[in-house]
Amino acid sequence: MATPASDRMTRWLVTGPPLAFLVLFFLIPSLIIGVASFRYPGEFGGLAPLRPTHPGEDAGLTAENYRVFFSDSVYFQIFLKSFVVAAVTTLLCLVLAYPLALLIARSPKRHRDLMVLLCVLPFASNFLVRVYAWMIMLGPFGLLFSQTAVLLAMVYVHLPFMILPLYTNLEKHDPALLDAAQDLGANGWHRFWKVTFPLSLPGVFAGSALVFIPVLGMFAIPEILGGIGDWMVGNMIKEGFLGVRDWPFGSMLSIMLTLCVLAIAGGAAWIARRKAE
Amino acid sequence: MRKLALGVEVVAILAVFASFFAGDARWFAMGAGVALFAIAAGLGAMGSRREMPSFWPWFASLAVYAFLYIPLAIVVIFSFNDSKLNAEWVGFTTEWYGKLFENESMLQAAGNSLLIAVVSAAIATILGTMAGIAIHRYRSKLLPVLVFTPVAMPEILLGVSLLVFFLNSAKPLLARVGLDFDLGVATVIIAHITFSIGFVAIIVRARLAGMDESIFEAARDLGATPWQTFRLVTLPLVLPGVIAGALMAFTLSIDDFVITFFTSGVGTKTLPLEIYTMIKVAVTPEVNAVSTLLMVLTLAMIVVAGRVAPDALRAKS
Image 1 (cartoon, rainbow over the protein chains, first blue to last red):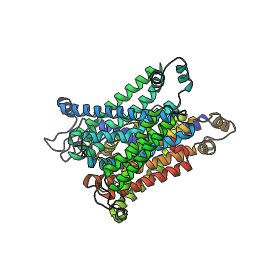
Image 2 (cartoon, each protein chain N blue to C red):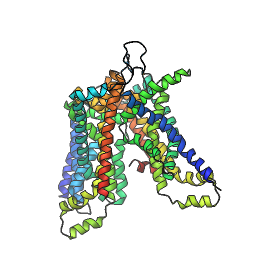
Image 3 (tube, helix red, strand yellow):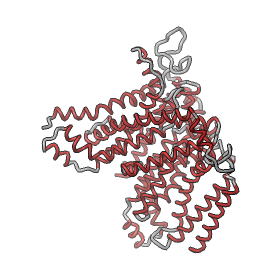
Image 4 (tube, chains in turn blue, red):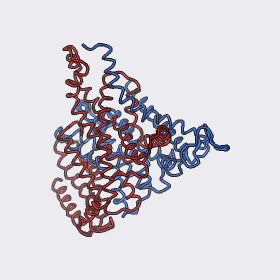
């Protein structure tokens, strides 16, 4: 017979290993980044020691990185730009994905799986291959290294993240509701805006979060398809760690990005809870 | 209406063939686009007579499918093009594939990718299955946060935090006990496990959520120990989810660029890193060839997944 003691042991046997792994390789590194954002850069990159090794060396903790961030509007502008790119990408994905998701959801059941698979299939090819495909596509048009190229690839890469949650939501709608609306005299357009669209809002929010958040932190697409002027937060973070090797500054930017993501996720959760009430 | 649509379609498809032999990528792309619009129009005209909503969703949807497939189709086509430039069709060749297999660093990168994917998927599957079961069974507060956050946040954040952790914390600490530690295959494997655990856990938990709790109680009432319950009841039931999770973890690892970029150091290359370098330095048709091969590989994986564990395909949503 299972005793409470052996139950507790099973619990720790199952919970312990993944918990230990993620504490060590996710929680602790995240906290280290938080501390690193308050430190000085090392003389040869990396971080300066916490205790000075020779006189005159910057050591210990400082809020200097945050001071620089808030005193120079350049950083604010890049964050703002990243938000705009993420918002535009989300909107474009929504516009492209909605008719398709609706069509799949309203198609005969036997076609649906195939239609969904066809949406996911390109998504299964490597991320860089999909970005590269746009290099070839846009090269002859002279659109390479432009904001347009960045946006196109952003939409292309993230579209499935919008299609799938929308489809999952739309598929669950009760067709009787549309019949009822029709019987009450609503035309096609009204049926969409007054019945289908409001009901699909949870799917819209889920898809938007799945597109917005990764786009906000993207660095590869602006780097490959954009010019210097198209840089986003991700490019600055990458530059901070691998380019100029100012780790504390890069850490500070990561923390700011994390805060933005948390604010968005929190906001989305708050909206969802209000809707549910 | 129907005949008209059909006519437009035929003309458009002929136009595509013509543009293909005219040998210019631009015209081909446009021709293909026009053809797909035409097919959409044709289907729309036919569909409106049946239960289909109307013409416009068909039209828009096929345009989206075209948007999804045309760029990749062009990569595949140019991988067989007998020209160093990705601009016009010159003739058929398999030269670029041959070059690929003579490319030492590419082969080594492929080997690294495979090794990293197999090891990280194996470990992530074990840990992720445990996490999925633990989250389903026990009301832990911390574990779900740690499991699902790496899935939801921008990859770059995990990449840089692991970079700092490995170089600034792990390396000096291990050096103190006499161990030589640096970025490389091992750190990439650890990083991949960190984000794959969440995906495996999501799939396993979804599988458990659809199950009747009473079978576990029945096993316990019949005197099974927790281990016996796990081995004889839980595991066989979640196994399709576990296999799906393993395939997912493998694919995620093979595909990952961002996190690998930050945790691999200078010496270690994986296929995506190799592609990145090639794209940054010079675009050659070899990139087309390796891209095409990768697509074929993923396609094969999906077919296998569909046969072995239908859950894997559904799990992507």
